[in-house]
Structure formats: structure tokens, C-alpha cells
Image: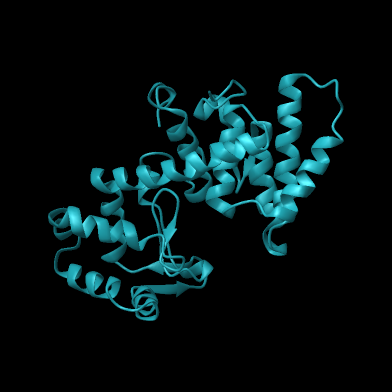
Length: 254
């Protein structure tokens, strides 16, 4: 998003723009059309936060569009809409079979959605009604992130962004990891400034959350979370500056 546009958005949308960029490599509004195939065994992942069929997070978006905006869905999917609707009404096994039937595996690109399905899903993500649904569902996760901020006595916009990214990418923080985090907190120097204490806490959370991930994802998660904790970094070859690009700083999110 152009700086003047994103600067005027509420923190929830600025955090959404950041995490969406980390998830899809795209910024708002293009990230609402993010689309990937079965690389992670989730069938199809779509949208700003990569809602997917495997975990059941994409189905509610598609069904709400069918229930409330059927005319838009008809305009987008045309004669292919009955096939999509039948798949959504079938078992999860049949739905995943449908997802695999509309994509192919490329030696270099991995799983690729076939046309015209790829174009139709991208058009769906550009639809204002679909974007509104995605924003509403993302707000639920942002509210959860703020609860986690209070749990760890974090107060900054950057901390809200970190916790939101954890909720989106990792789901939550386990009891064992939380205990380890609080243990590290207790060993922090007592003479740190307010800002330095905030950053040290975020770095601890970033590292311990990464180390609790599956072995093959540890360093990827660590880079992503430390980028947010430190306010700058390189993730998937892209340079990020949270304050410069997303107007997310160490000022209070309250």
C-alpha cells in the first residue's frame, strides 16, 4: 500500500499488511488474492492469511460468499460454480480430491493451480465483499494477539504485530514454551529502559517460539519472528522495515 494510505489505517490493518506480505510475498490489496497449491498438504491456500481447505479455514469464506453474495460468485466462477459448490458440500476427502484435480505439480514451481481456476480465485480475492470477510476474520486473530500481549505484559505496536504473526503462522504458544519464556523474562537485567525491555522480551519470544516449531521450520520461523521483534530484517529474500513500510513502531498500541 502507498505510505499515506497505510499510515492512516488502524493498527490491525497495518499488522495484517505486514503478516500478509510475509505469508504471500504481496502487499495489500494484492495479498487478498494470494493463492498456493498443495505444497503443505492443505489442498488449496487462499487469501490474505492463506486460509486453507486442509484445516477448514477456507471453507467458511467460500460458503459465506455463496450464501450472501451468490451473484458475485456466479460472475466470477461462471459455469464452474456448481463444481465448486458440490465439492464444498461433500466430505473433506472428496473436497481434497477436488482441490488436487484442479492443480498440477511442476518440477520447479511445485503445485500450480490450473486455469481458469487460478484466474477465478484471484478475481475472488479482488472482490470487495470477499476482502471484507477476510478482514473480519483477521480481526478476530488480531484481538487474540492483543490478549497474548497482555499475558506477556507487552505494550507496543511491534509486539502486537509479533503476536498477530504468531497467531496466524503458529496458532498459539504452548504451556511449556510460555513457561520457558517467563523464565527467561525473570533473568533480564532490572535496569533496562522501557523500550529495551520490550525489545528483549520480543526477542526471547521470537527465539523460543521458533525453537518450539518443527525442526525443518525452526530457522524460517526464527528469521520471520526476529524481523518483527527487531523492527527490521530479511525474510524470504525480501527486506523489511516495519516502521518505514508499515508504520508499526515501538509506540504504545493503546
